[in-house]
Image (tube, rainbow, N blue to C red):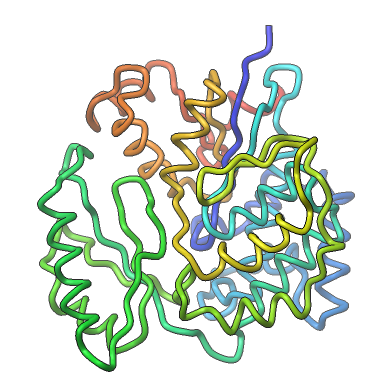
Length: 346
């Protein structure tokens, strides 16, 4: 009997040095899927994703640049989606984080192949002449991934203080499980990095080569995207889609103008609530598994943190989550070889 699964698509920052060669390792046989992506990129005067993936060394200035990173992640994720064993899993819904929303639409059939790479590549290339602002990450959970109201209050207080300065603009960008991603202009980022107390060894963490996605600072990008990407690119999905508000776009009830408007409007300039998307995924679809597409697996912790917040399957802290993942993983990350083997045909 098939198991049900909700598929989760990764966002920016998921193709790093350890992912170099991901397409070559896992998808050398998927040229029918990859060749059109490469052809489109070459028409735009950009490097083919398979060429970037085959380079002998990971080069941040090249691989992590928006116009390349987006297409690389798209190619890896969509090839992973095609590789899922459909004899074993019935996919009941698709969602994603941030840029992963574009990938989720492609996986669910709301974008055909040409439309998908056009959208992904266009949005990824919007700021190749210069980023607008940046992002930092700060935790609002304790070491056991349990909600910590004091940390949330501290972050809220620092945001309020920084925004009182006339040169600063800082906004919630992404609710990412037990993490909060803040999008801000350069003065606000500097002020927050200086004022937020260290948490563990990593935070506050400023994300390299990330703009202030999902904030009003990207209003010019939203306007440009609307002018360049017509609603005709979109079609009704073949699978339910969960967006960055937790809203479900059903196959037979999707208004294409509304989908275009959300994708290039609110999704660009308002906070992306990945936590809500995971909550809706588990509560509305009650899947047997969550499948996280590669490359990478850095969404594993935020997903685990949201499962803990919901006390899903009795998990109440990080120890519970890790034990469940060791015994009978609810979350299967295709970027991890041992979990990948449970998703692809044997």
